[in-house]
Structure formats: C-alpha cells, structure tokens
Image 1 (tube, rainbow, N blue to C red):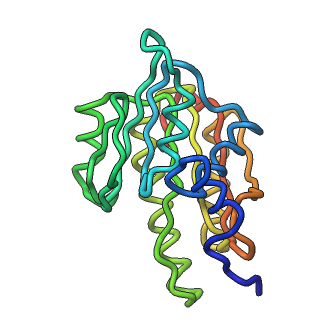
Image 2: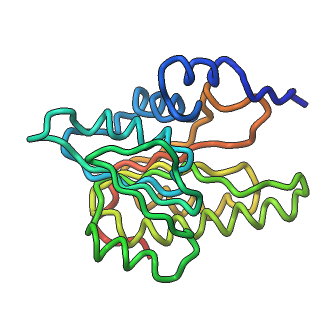
Length: 205
C-alpha cells in the first residue's frame, strides 16, 4: 500500500503558488488535457471546499470584466479567507432537497459543472462504496437539472464496482466522455475523473 504523504510536492507547490489546495493542479491538468473553460462562462463548483477548484475556474473564465465569467461554489463547510467579485458561495448541504431549485432560481443554468467532492471514507469497503454511490448519484441529480444543453461536466468518482453502471449511463448523456486517473492524485488513491463534453440536448433521465 502506498504511504500517504499529506505535505507532498503538490501541497508544497500549492503553498508556493498561492492555491488553497493541492487539488487545484488536478483541475489544471484536466483543463490541459480536455479544454473546459472559455471566457464568460458560468461555472458551478459542487463541494468546493477548500476552494482550489474555484480559484482555478475564476482564473480561467476571463480576467477582463467585459468577458468575465462567474463561479458559484457550494459546500457545507465554510471557506475562510477567500473572496472574489465574480465568485459567490452558498453554504449548503448537497443532500438538501431544496438546493437544486435554489440554484436555478438564483443563477439559472450553468455552462460547466465541476465536482471534486468526496465522502469521508472509513476503510470499510461496503460502507465506503455505498457512501460514494450516494454522493455520486446526488451530484448527477443536481447536474442533470442545472447544466445547460451542450454544457460540460467534471466529476470525481471512486473505483467501486457499484459505481460502474452509473458512470456508464452517464457517458451516454454526452457527445464525448472520458475517464482518467490524474498525475496530481495522491498515490494509492482509487479516485478517477469523469469528463463529459457537450451534454446532449435531451436532459438526463
């Protein structure tokens, strides 16, 4: 089993370059391999704590105000010492039944939905698989309502057999879909990333 090193080179790099988390480099790598961002986009960051992905998204959606996009972050945990004029934060539980409608009422549909959220894994396979499945289902449920047609979706998921049918079904809802393991992921982690490009015009079932 790979040894977990919290303060690895990605952690040190994030500290040096001013990112709120090492996870910022995962999104940068994803964007390099599968270009996700355009100036003026409206981006939703589900499970955004501690803020690294929102930081990257803000950098990518346009620096000039006439073409500047907007990023909305949602998490149950508050973000400290981070603010931006084009970033809005909702402190909400992703499992809140009223959340999806609140997102639509306040912001409308999004061009890109991101999710790097993860359950608090216990090391007990059956329990972890169920928690991962429930979280993935919830994020997809929200995304299917708030992502516009031809929008893109990035989702972290874990390599549990229980998730295979769900991810396969998700792939069919996009014109192009990929699953990859990232260099910036921690050694020994079972996390993978789903990248869906151009949501088909019919909404997800």
